[in-house]
Length: 563
Image (cartoon, rainbow, N blue to C red):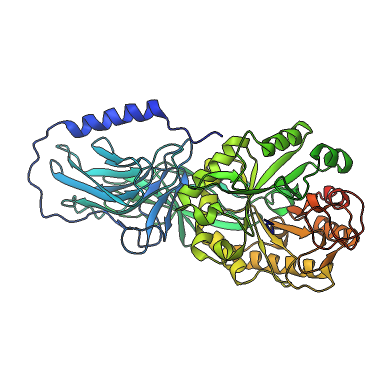
């Protein structure tokens, strides 16, 4: 919106100390190493330059390949650590018995580990740039495979790894592939996921992983005979197959295929519906929320604006404390009256977290502070102006951070809000949507602001046309049907007179709300409750709409949005 003017993540100390002690013991003992053969990296896809994770397998499906930050080449691994999963990514390779190997790699993030299953490991605390880790180990007398891994630590944010090397001789020349997995079947589905199971394959040495394909694209690798593929679109048909893989990298033939159509979800999409006009405690004669709620029936408010207080530290309006101030008092009042809030990060101006936090992981940590402080169900990133909306690197940073916090906070809904033309998203809006698809950000709601676009007199027609343009872009980008696309859309208008003197009257806003209900979109908001008061001929000011209306009339209309 046009901006006019906690608990922190806790480090699991006892777990860390125990693991550090174990790592110290593993590294501290003196071992007489036999001589190695000529060094050669025997890992496959060591720098992730293929653009995919395979043949690495990542727990929780939390590993992805990113273009920034990288150590070498153009790609790196990102592990989206959660509070319950350290995003361990591993690869099993064939090795020679009783042979010395050197494992090394470049990592970045908070508490990142590199090691071999059942053997040595090493770690680094929190480098701000890539740091190299290295560890030596010797295979056992009859050992023919080794599983190399990297992982982060619980609730410590996304880590990055690149250019991982296992130097030493390759193992036996095993060329026999496993048998194909049998009886692939679907064991469950939702609007965004499909669960699969199959019968185990056999191999002359041993099966080390199963690769799951959707069509021709590998989407997941697991070590067992079950998997859940997530991040799917609602009401969409998918065809899956599975291949088995051994330590030498031999892949089996594909299993039988199984076709599954995901559920429709709420209204064909996420099932998330929210009527939440903006409320700003730092401007515009803030109204009594209890009065507004009792007068209108509104339950949700979008609280503006969460900005950077310095050092990537979230504060209300860059000046008011995250907790303990007037904003928390108002939030407590809203919740006491049976309502809730979604904070809006960003806006048109001010010192924004998205632009000022140094990395996606730092931004995700800042978002997490706010999520923890208020036990949030949803967050809104209001991406505007040249510092965020028209900065491609910042767009990517914001979307990656949203992907991280969504993975770390099950059930959290993520919203992005941005400007539009009268016919749909602009170049940067289209790019935002394409980036969200590319990195798998799984955004719940794409909200447009259909005002201040020089839209002329027909604000209803222009709002509908802009929303239809957004729907078309979502369909073409994600492959959604109409119902699913509408269910990922939000509209955030400006009541009364906009900055460019566009007029949205109560009657026009009622038309927009009714259209939104009939098309089952996800979210309806406006800027702002502070302005939802009459001042006919008053112009564009902070505490009234500039037109003749009743007190809280736009809020009452918005409260009738049900999706």
